Length: 387
Image (cartoon, rainbow, N blue to C red; front, side):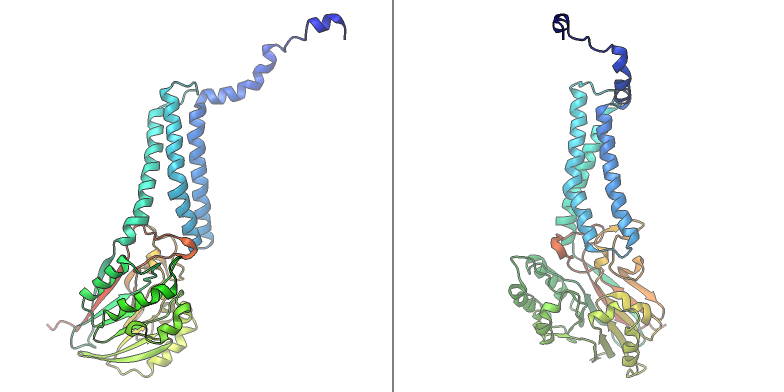
């Protein structure tokens, strides 16, 4: 290198040479600005996550509670602060006059983002702490010529208590206040989470059950989470009788009731259970009021044409998350979504599917309900009104 090049370094390339390289990025930023890119990126991310969950639902229509957990964590813990932060950045950039390009009506954009974050956060609080405690009584009136006097049947399902506390005591006080003649519980009694255990909560639940004492008794069918306590249940926990694939005859004041309790696996089996139910029906008299109880409602798909007066089921929790005009996001059942909650005709029979007193807690899911408050059903069976 000669002396002259040391004193005079090479000149930078002319402006015309670097202009094309910057033109694309600067042109994009000039058109929508960094703030515009930010909120657009947030929306694309949100839509991608929603598309992912909707895709999972379409692939597996019956879903799983892992889908609820993922959707809950995103909508309650991730999305609200993300939207609020993005709205705050857009607002801050606008009021300080940072040159981010023409961001358009930044005040409107930032307000929408912040409001969406606040609303989602509020919805999460409501779904976690308010609606799961809004226990209601759904009433159904059924006329039947097989009874000469009214009978009050209380259908309870999926209490599924994390720990037996004030909510459960209030629920049982509501049950007692209804003064039922007969109580049928369609499974899933306890689902304790640490530090609570089955050993710590079972005596409390037994005391609550023992407080009811309806004239015709309390009957229970096994659910999906009851296997750790099946021995105490079969031993008559709290004065409650567990029917595990067996029937019982009850002599009420207005007639005779035949109640069959299915095993949990049979209630999920919409094909194999039919033979068992038909064999049990062979011993029924024409005037008997026939009731079949199972944890899951799937069994009605193969027994709906049989002469059963009333079927009872739970398991679905009504979906826990119900979207208007769509229904439950998941049901964990093969029955149509519309059947996952409520009382309806299915062939020759009628079925009541309970939304449940409690919530699912598998995998650490908190108590969570949206547009699906917890419930119990009082079914008032009455003789027909004479003309």
